[in-house]
Image (cartoon, rainbow, N blue to C red):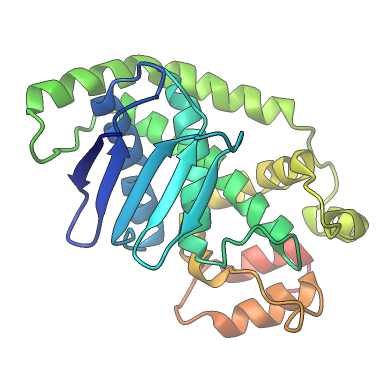
Amino acid sequence: MRMTPTRINDFCTLYVDETNWGGADISALIQVFRSVIDEYEKVSGIDPPGVLHIFPDPGFGNPKCCKTSDYYTIYLTAKGDYWSQYVYQFAHEYCHLLINGPLDGELETTFWFEESICELASMYFLNRTTIRWGAYSPIRIPGVPMSSQQDVLQRLKVFAPGQQKYLANLRNKNSSIDSPLSFWLDENMSILSEPVYHRNMYNQIANSLLDLFIDYPDLWKLLPFLYRPTPAEYSGFHDFITQVLRNRLSIELEHFPQFVDFLTGKE
């Protein structure tokens, strides 16, 4: 195992395993991950974590985010030059990291909503990085020659149209929710609350929320307040959104009322 350390900013150092990515160029991988982190920071205002390790999947079979006392670790299953999959998987797991919940895998209270928000992040940041690469915006990486970075970004730019198609196919694949999302959630809450994954339903919720977050990107500032309540603290999703989350907020958020109304119809 060889790790490439990359300084993101004064707050974060990224360590990326150089091996077992199916032949992917490590310089390209760093650019991909940095692009996602940078786009998150732009819309959320949240500083990246102090130390973040990224590894290829060692056998879990699915992407995963976990936390130790000193750093976060993200495992991804994407391989080769499938940049869209790297962005999709990394944006999802990085979202869990910024929500800063227990990361214990427990399927209780609002776990389904956190999964839906992380699926939303995958879609949203696929779109953001596609725009970024299409505009050919280089990120200077300490210790990596700029000529090398430009070569990587030119290749990513070529992949930008394909990535936009990937997102469009993803949205089309997920069946749409025809009724207002708040009604649909009420009708399906018993299923969503089951201690099992309903990935297709999370994708439907994410698809429904995507345009709202594109219109109001300041809503990403909600992430650190969305952590899952304990069973003792939880008295239902409506109460979580309209009371618990509202009471947690320590920032002014202009479009929070639209978010509440979209989810509950009760703002």
